[in-house]
Image (cartoon, rainbow, N blue to C red; front, side, top):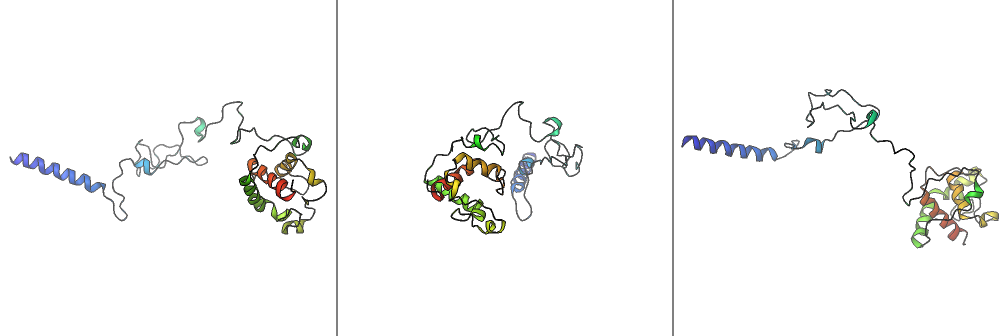
Length: 208
């Protein structure tokens, strides 16, 4: 009888200890059943630690390796990203190929049609993007009288001369690759956003 009583006491104590270990308060996070779910291993591309025992005195990792070991053993040469398949070509979100025309290939660029369908939302987004990227030089009305334009001079007046009749592809190309005093913006503005700016310039500034 005493043995049975002792067994029940031990079981009860074990259950109580189990529930107590699940609790957390203050700075105590409680017992972690899967510590790597909370503290994932961070792969460092330039400072990988390849010694699997580094930090073993501190380790709580489930794989038995040291806490500081952060080398990627799954990919060749410990790379954190795999190289793309040979001869593959990246595409944009809409499935377009990378823009490969050179800065001087304006005639070819002029033949490109705007792939973004024109609607009120696109115009609103184009206006916001124009105010963000273009107004400093070209001014609110596109007349080349922005604050930065007044300083550097020679900024195109989008409402005057030959600029009125420029094809959309030409404007897109100049924003992407630059021309004269116009710097290239292709590395700062995604292609779909540039096309929205083009819509805004043609529809609202040039009223075409």
